[in-house]
Image (tube, rainbow, N blue to C red):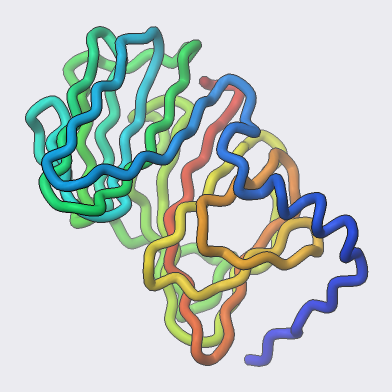
Length: 223
């Protein structure tokens, strides 16, 4: 399978867009921030209304005294401050806050911890046979949120498609060596990327590359 190399005919437009695709706070009503912690460093997430999602991209942390290993999620409603402490150095975390979250979650399910080994492999007919698709958080567990992953080695493509009702962010793993295409413009994919509502997007890698990332769906009408 040969992947056509996109020629950018809109260089000025790409410069403008490229400033925005890695902007973490483009989604209305959702606050996203990245934090780096040194070994034994502590961070307190102050009490606010709504829902909070904490993701460890690498390293290990203690979150309200619960262990979070690399590539794990901690989801809860914010009632009191959340204490976070890095166990290993150079720990990078992503904090997503939805202050006006309107979904109803069974309190018995919170806090919800999701580890990488909890993911489920699924078949996605829209992707190539060599693509490994996974679901980390299925729909209806936390209304308005779905988390999944995509992985493959070598030359491959996630065909361009769009989601009229969904805002997305993609978080690359260290092994990710892919490009992302948004509305016919191609970008490096080495940081968290916002996929705007309704945009046509896909991912591609070449022979010496790899696709390896997780995606988070925000179904706006439910959150």
